[in-house]
Length: 239
Length: 123
Image 1 (cartoon, one colour):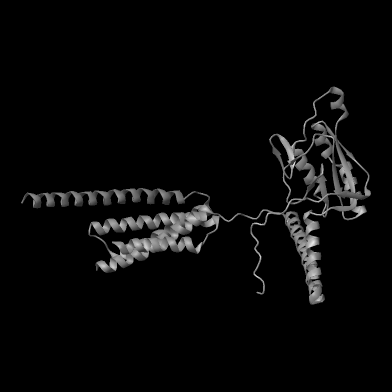
Image 2 (image 1 turned 60 degrees about the vertical axis):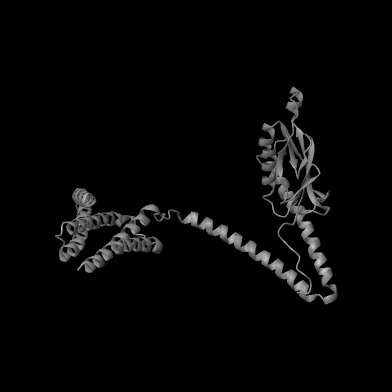
């Protein structure tokens, strides 16, 4: 008799436990209602498509590299590898490059000179903002006061001085060089920067931007520092 | 004693792991059903302790109470009256009463046992 009661109690308790758990589930993490309208969804779709096309172009580039490797004979495989390394080095900003670009001079504003306001180093926030603004354009190379700014670079304040790659940026005036892939893209960047609101941000810090017209051969130095390779290891040969 | 507890744990983990969610609309019904189930459960425990436990009453009470509570809530929604509050009130009061009775019975048992062991000790 007692066994039968136990058995029934167990069954009922199982049911109760299940019900409580389901209730807990539904109260604790309710499914969020999708409230996006059609335009928001289209926007997201457009972003995904952009990503898709970027990935596709990347794949195409890699496919090209692979076919180069394949088409080359055994003896010139080394040459192909060297080319790739050279290309990667250029991409990472370790080599000196020359190309179409613009030179921007950051100067103290005439008003601040007239009033005798002391010239201070450019703030790291402002410089970061500027770099972000310029980075809307793809495939550019940038040099700030002689320091190459790449994806690996850091802009930060060290001992009160704004620095790029750990080296201090001198107080204004200093020059920022931007090299674009083609002259027309350089012109696009020039026009964009002329109309950009970044001027106001600089003016608030008593600085003005003097943007030169696009030139055909702007040259900049590479970033001489070596990469720190923390994760990749060379495979033993012959495997 | 342990088997029902095992059932409870099994049920809770089953519910949590399966990640079943009911729509917000029906969450009221489920909450009241849970309340009804708990009321029946404690009623059953009380009846068992008072030795008036009946299988049929317990099982039928369990399902009937749940159905009645959910039905009342459903009716309330359609009539625009919060009828489910009536069920919450009724089950809440009964729950408290049942638990109080269970407590008293257990207390009596416990003190009786104390007396018996004292007697044994004196002998």
